[in-house]
Length: 337
Image (cartoon, rainbow, N blue to C red; front, side, top):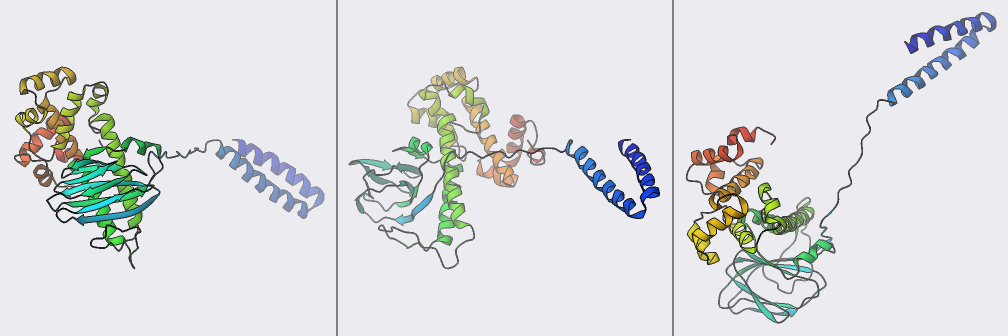
């Protein structure tokens, strides 16, 4: 309606001008008309244009530099002399046990455990009478969140170990790593390194650290029904959840839990039920199913998932999955939940 009225009135002016002053003035008004029409159109359209705002991503952790990466098989009675440096170091026992000295005191790292060594902390390593395999990565990170890890030791959950595997496999294809060099002080790029290998190492390390922070904060970062309860829970409850989490890729019995915590099974079951409203076994299955959901999103097939999580059969897995999720594994795979 606006344009129709505008067109009609404006052409009357153009006609009068043409009759009075000729064709040149007509062309001038015609150009001006189209220019004004274009401006009016843009003004009207811009009023309904959707505005987008860019969300700034906050970084909980930022690994600035990788210093060294080692994977070593230590000989019997091997001793690495004490040293210190101004960056972080992680020691991980991949096979067997190893001893790490911190400030003159020995800490035993059992297979599957990880120890954080803070900057400028004196430390050494001993193999004892075995031949352990150790993974060591040192890095620079000035993020305040790293202070949480100072001198901490963790049993790395099996579902996080793939991140260590990522770091090691990418390092082998990105850097020229020596077979055994405890005095390694710099990483040398391969002639044709993996495209993006350094970034994958950084991202994998940061992801591992964030997952460990989450687990420490919530004791079960994927279990929503624990968040409000565990925040004020006792050490015993936390320990039960930690043990259940560590066994989702294996088998579990109440007798195992009782032996590890040195409490009777009846007391443990009653205590946990009162604290969480769930039985220990229900909680254990919920942990397994939450992990199954994560694996499905990674495109693992159902048979493989059932086997990895130690279900007796794929039909048992499907039955338990539907009970806890409300849909079959196939329905979940096709959903966006």
